[in-house]
Length: 228
Ligand SMILES: C[S@@+](CC[C@H](N)C(=O)[O-])C[C@H]1O[C@@H](n2cnc3c(N)ncnc32)[C@H](O)[C@@H]1O
Image 1 (cartoon, rainbow, N blue to C red):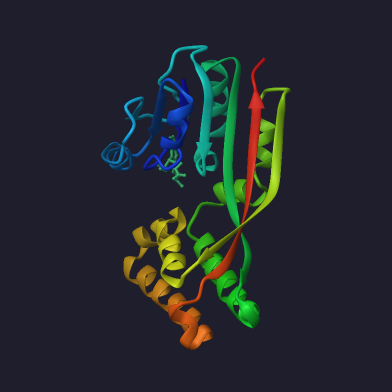
Image 2 (cartoon, rainbow, N blue to C red; image 1 turned 60 degrees about the vertical axis):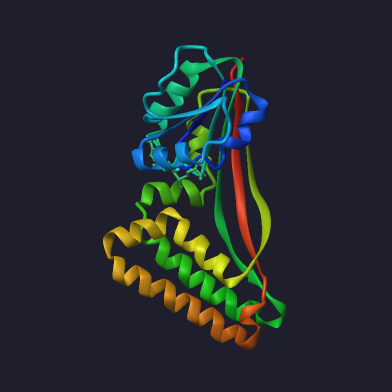
C-alpha cells in the first residue's frame, strides 16, 4: 500500500501504480482531487480529500508514505506523527522537493538570461508564506530533523538540467504554486508579470527565441526514512 500525501493532480501518484497493490492519493484541495480523478488511468489508484495531519489510514497499514513538492505545506510535527502511526514495520517515508538553481544556460546569453530568472524567482517567492519558503530554501533540513526515526537520510543538491522552450518555461511558471498565489492576490498584475518575463527572454534571444531550448537548472532534494 502506498500513500501519496498532497498528491495534487496525481503527477507522482500514478507512477507508483506498477509497484504497489494499492495506491491512495490524498489532498486537502477538492479541486485538485477532482482533476486527479479525471486523469486516473490505473485501476489500483484511488483518490480522496484528506489532510496530511489526519491520514485516513489504519495503524501499521502503509508500506510507503510519499509527499512530492508538498511536505513544506504540512504542519510537520502532526504529519510526522501520523506517518509514524500508519507506516508498517520496514515501511518507508519519502519526501521530495526542489528549488530553482538560479541558472539558465544558452550559448553566450546565459548571464543575461540568468538575471531574468533570478528576478522572476525573487518576485514569485514573495507570494508564499515564509514558513514554506524556509523549508524549501534549507532543502528540508528542518523537516528532516522533525522525523522521529533513526534510520533516515537527507540528500541535497541533486542538480537536474531540463532543456525547455520559452512556452515551456512560461507554462512551468504558470503551474507553480507561488504563481497561483500571485494570481489569487492580483490576477491582472500576475498575468502582466509573466508577459513581461516572456518579453524580456525573447528580447535577449532575438530571432532564436522561436527555436531555442534553454537549459534550466533545478536543485532537487529528498528525505528518506525507514521505520524498523
Ligand atoms: C505544489 S502541490 C504538489 C502536488 C503534487 N504532489 C505534484 O508534485 O504535482 C502541493 C499540494 O499539497 C496540497 N496540500 C497542502 N497542504 C496540505 C495538507 N495539509 N494536507 C494535504 N494536502 C495539502 C495542496 O493542495 C497541493 O495540491
